[in-house]
Length: 212
Image 1 (tube, rainbow, N blue to C red):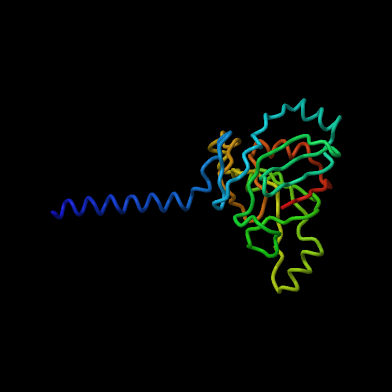
Image 2 (cartoon, rainbow, N blue to C red):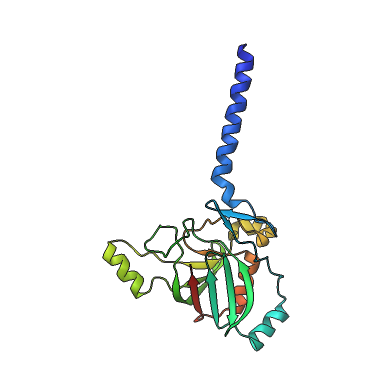
């Protein structure tokens, strides 16, 4: 085997390893496509929830007048956010969670999304991830649990978009972008186009119930 052949073989091997490493590192950011079978942490995600048809401003106004949103229900296992008027589901949105999604959030940096009853208590129209609604985690019980364990409960858990404001400036089509896998530090991430709707439909003070 001559040196040239060995060099070429080594180069190809290195190239394959580099590409494989990059794929492994960034695969969670590959876009989700409609009707696509999705995976996260080697667990198949339910595929029943499709990307919703975007509402017009007139339709949003009609919802606010006729069936205003009274609560948000988040189903972590199903990766879906539901907006409800009383017991009626008005809108469904696919979403992504923290990088370690199973279980209730205990401490800062654990990559988990909290579970339980909270409130949307404020919002940020200049969020790094487009727009965001703040979830009132941690509550008193969360703080007490963290204190007992000697850790910080964390905070700044939001519902937000999936593309950053800077990315949007260069690529407006990222309004429809959603990564295939869970990727946040505990927040609930939806498409930016869906975040626009949630922003307009949900008022501060709205109850949010987060289920396993």
